[in-house]
Structure formats: C-alpha cells, structure tokens
Image (tube, rainbow, N blue to C red; front, top):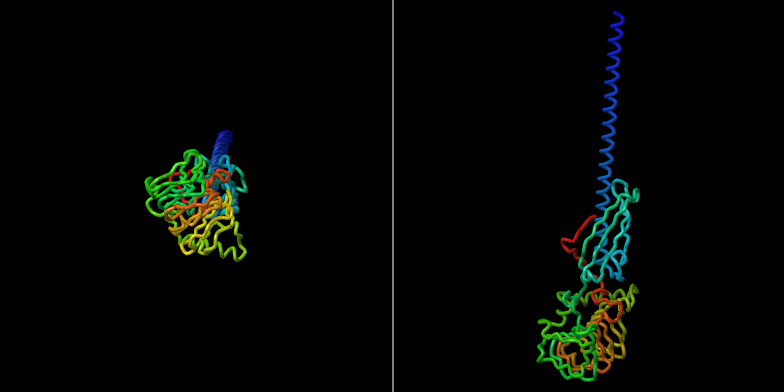
Length: 353
C-alpha cells in the first residue's frame, strides 16, 4: 500500500510540475508578446510623431519661402538652399530636429521643390521625410515672366532717332512687345540686337496688365509707401528697396537694383515724364503711366529688365540701352529676384518617404 501511495504522489507531483512549467511558459510568452506589442506600438507612435514633425517642417518651409527672397545657386536640390526650423518638442517628451531644403533648377524653373526631414533627437533611427512642389508668386504676371521682353509698348512705334538699342539676350528672342499690329510699328533707328524679333499685337489691355497681371497700381503704391516708411525709420536702406512709385517730376539719376535684386520703378501720371538719364543703371522694370511719355527724350541709361510705355513710342535718346534682365549676370529672371508674395502648393505633388 505504501508503494502505491508513493507512486501516486510522485505522479501528482510530476503533473503539478508540468502544469506549473506550462503556466510559467504561458505567462512568460504572454509577457514577451505584450512587451513586443508595446515596442511595436511605441515604434509606430514614434514613426507617426516623426511624420507629423516632418509635415510641420514642410509647412514652416513653405511659409518661410512665401515671405523671403532666397538666393538661388546652381546645383542639385540639396545644394540650392537649406534652412533649419526650430526643434519641435511633442507631448511624449521627444524632440525632433528638422531640416528643410529648397530646389529650383533649370528643369523645374518657375516651381520650387520643398523637402522636409525630421529626425528624433533621442534616436537618430527615427526619421521621416515629406516633400511638396510649390509655385512662388511675385507681383509679376506669370505670362509676362515666361517671355519678359526688354521693351513693352502699349501703342505704335515710329520715328525713333539717336540709335538706342534693345537686346533680347538670345538670338531671335523677343526684343519688343507691342499691343499694335505690324502696320503700326516702324522702329526707325532703334537698334535691335541679337537678331531680336518683335511681338505684334502681343496684348490687348494695358502695358501694366501685361507685366503685372491682376496686381494693381494701388498695391504697388502700398508696397512703395511701406518701404519708404521703413527707410525713414532706418530699418532699410535705398539699396534694399524693391518698389518705387514716383510722383515727383524730377529727372531720375539714381542707380537701382542689381543682378540678384530686381526693382520696379513706376512713374505715375502725376510725375509727368521724368527722364531716366545721366548714365544710370537700373535692374528690373521701368514703367511710365502717362501715355505721352514715349516722346520725352528718355535715355542715357542702361536698363537690365524691361522699359514699358503706356502709349506710343516715338523718341529715345542716344546711348539708351535696354537688355534682358538675365544678361546682367547669373542667368536669373526678374521674377527670381523679387520678393515672393505667396507660394501656393501644386496639387498632386505631395510625397512622403
């Protein structure tokens, strides 16, 4: 009887050990599984954090682009321009460092690729990237910037003397755009260089609308007044300014702009027709609102950009030179050196990776 009792107890003990081992295994496996799920959940959460941080950097970059004037350089996207938004701290306590790069090259001219990268400060393996194409806007009419002829005349052209010259920069490029047909254009002694061509009946409205589109003269006056106030307050100098709305009748003798800093010099009808002369050099757009200003002997200056007349052009002075803006150096267009007024997103170009 004792032997059977001992055997039964041994079996019971063995079964208890097996059950205990099984329960231990189940508990251990369950704990390990729970830990794995927690790790996966944490990784997914941190990946989502990084993604949102990258998106925040993208929005920061687009807003920055819309309110600044970048200096573009040739090269690949990563070589064009880079900024670092402030580090982003999130509710989990993690911090993400962001880098935003901008690309504008020949293949995407007129558009800018904005790419944002976010990297966790706690673990550099946690990272995310997003990108978006945008179309930066300036005060210029996008249709004008595609051609940007060095001379625009809202009227006929006739009887020009003195051998002034106009250069479109490339052989066969548009040197003169006029609202009138060929029968109304006789360039006289206007020396059109580089085998430049004339765009007849190029626009139907005003020279202002051809160059600036929906941007109004009132808006330019506001921009000019803002810069005048900033200059008076010592917050900017004359060479920092971009916008000039002139009401004074004095002749203009001041150099303005540079190859990387275009200006808009607009003479209002109230100013009459001041002459731009004295050997000055201006980079950008020179515009005359008064239709009679095409017969006032304007000259003795070099314009890299566009000289625009709101009326017939019948007189320019010798030694007047108007050249395409890109000839100033760097190969950039006027629109690339004016401050941006916005950078709307191009639908369908968002990407994450």
